Length: 120
Image (tube, rainbow, N blue to C red):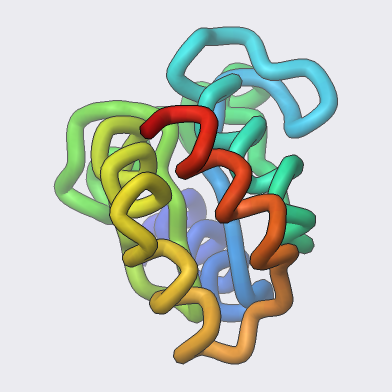
C-alpha cells in the first residue's frame, strides 16, 4: 500500500467524519468544498478536514482511494459517501440526517431542517 493510501486509510478509519477538500473547514478554497463544509459546519457536525491543496500525493491519492474523480469527498465511519452534488441532495432529502443518525454522529437536527426550509 502506498504511503498516501495508508495515510488516507488511517485517517478515514480514525475519524467518524472526514472531508477531503480544497482548503480547510474555516477557509474553503473552492465553491464545492465551501458548500459541503458549510453544510457540515451549520449542522454542527464534528469532522476532520483534510486540505488536498497542501499535498499533491494526497490530492491524487484520495481520487485513487475512492475511485472518484472529484473533490470534495465525504467519509462517514470509514465509508465514502460522495461529493458536493450527492451531499447536497442527501441534505435536502434528509438522507444525510439518517446516515449520521444511524452511525451515531451528533448533529443539530434543527439546523438541518432550516437548510431544507430555506431550499424548499
